Structures are given as structure tokens and as C-alpha cells.
Length: 382
Ligand code: HSE
Image (cartoon, rainbow, N blue to C red; front, side, top):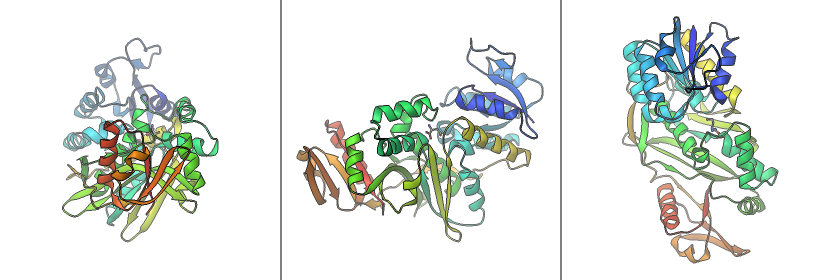
């Protein structure tokens, strides 16, 4: 099967290279920006790519929603299978792409969009055929895991850790999606779509790691805890789901503490199977390209979809999820929370809240920050 590649950045170039030695697959043309067509296999328009004789599948690794969505629709309507590593695209337009692909009888797979090289969505999509998924989530962003690990073990500052993650090709072109938790949120939204047939677009919360400092990391370590950015999702009665991303403080015995560098640890719990854990590199050229190639191999074997035909957009409801939170904030704001314990070190106030809902915590933080407060918060693991 000849595969065209859209984009020739970190992931696109990896896919193109891997296609040269993948069984049953061959290199097709590559779409690049005008002026970047410095090799005979490069094209600068989607029309030229789709017109190339023999192209049966398109692998997209451009990122962003437009023009990726228009190009994806053009490819599908031209009868090409479509695979992508682009979580922003699938989180926003996955339902339309799946419907168009079903109409045209072509495949639409996106396992590289959640967990990079980790075969999480594929296994989840198999599990839902025979089991009920009680919950899913985990560490789904390689950049922030790399940063938190580097800040804790190598004592790097936030800025140094981010620079390293960018140099290593883990971060998005605009790393704000990584550090704000939006990238992980998009991935858990895809997990929800696969597991529950609900792609939530409202009621979602993402707290990232933008507000953590080297001092926060030291204080958390002094409590014998490790901070990881985690995504969580599960069903809520009434056809909704809970879905959110936030930093979590873990005891040393938690498996997530041993997830280092750019690794991800995704998990689901099946009602019958119990917990299933998938760990591997969630970012970077080769892990992500390998997941795209895995999708293409699935299409060769006639596995065309991981989204159910009845998948729909829906809302998240994070009211019933409750935790105690660790909060670092100006002392004057302590009264905004019901406090379990409280301490003051070097002019910084740290408090532990009584259990409160995810919705209440995220909304309180948004309100206080809008009023100019500088604060960091993280949930204690249940
Ligand atoms: N920027 C993403 C991450 C890439 O760090 O996980 C893989 O999705």
C-alpha cells in the first residue's frame, strides 16, 4: 500500500523513513510547505499528493486543525485510508472524519494521537468489544513527564527542563498545549470516545504544570511525594463522562513514580479484566511514527476503525470526583478553602484542603488567578 505523508517535521519525517522498510507499505509523496520542496518526493499541494498514482493511504503529521481537517476530508473523499497522530484534529473533528470514512469505506485510525508509541487506544478499542471500561487515564504527556522528572531528579529549573524537552522533540511546536495540560486533555477525550462512545467537548478541566516552580518540587519531595501530570476519565450516570487533567501527588509506592523521562503510562480498568497498564515512550519521532505504521498495518489487515459508529459529542461532569488538594498560594487567600492542614515556609503558604470536587477546585483556581493570585495546586492520589 503506497502511503502519502502530510508534514515532514519530527513525526512526518519519521513516518516517511519507516515506510522505506515496512512490510506491505511503500513510500508515497510528502506534502510540505511551499518553498520546502527540496527533494523529488515532496509536493506543495494536497491536490498533487492525492493525484499521485497508486496512493491508497494518507498519514497526517502536520498538527493543528486547519488545514489538516480539509486535507483529511479531501483524502477520505478521494477514497484514501486516513491515519493521523494529530490529537487536536481528532478531538475536534474525529466524529466527522469517522463518518466520512465509513461513507467512503476507508479506514480511519489515530492510535498515535494518544500515548505516542504506546498501544493504548488499540487495546482499549479491543477491550470495549467484550468488557465494560470502569475508568481510564494515566500519564499521557511526554513533555511534562520529562519536565517533572528532570525538575525532581536533576534539579533543573522549569525553563531548563522545558528547553531540554523541546530540544529532544517531545514538545509540540507551541509547547503551551503540553504545559497547560491541553495536550493530555485531548488525549483523554480520545480515550473517552473509544471507551464510551462519548467525545466530550464541554465541562472539561485541565490544570497543567505551568505554575510549578523548583521550590514547589522540593517542598513536594520533602513530603515524600512525587508530582505527575495525570488524565482521568470514566462514565457518569446519564450518558456523560468525567474527564480532566491535573497534577497529582503520589506516594513512592505508586507505579507512576517510576515513569521517567518522556515515558507515558496509560491505564484502563475493565470490569472483568481488572486494571491494565501500558507504558512506553509517549513522544518523539520514532515512537510516534511506529504507532502510525501500526495503524497502517491494521488497515492492511482490514481493521479500519477504533471509534464506534454511534460515537457522539457530549459533556463532561466533574462534580462527583472529589479529592483533597495540595495548594501553594498567598497566605491571604487561605480562607478561600476548607483547610485540613496548613503550613508556612519561607513566606509561602502550603495547605491541604478537605476533599472537594474537581470542578470546585479548578473553578476556584481560575477565579483567584483572574484576580492576580499566583498559585499551584495538585490533587492527592485517592
Ligand atoms: N507533545 C506530545 C507529548 C507529543 O509530549 O506527549 C506526543 O503526543
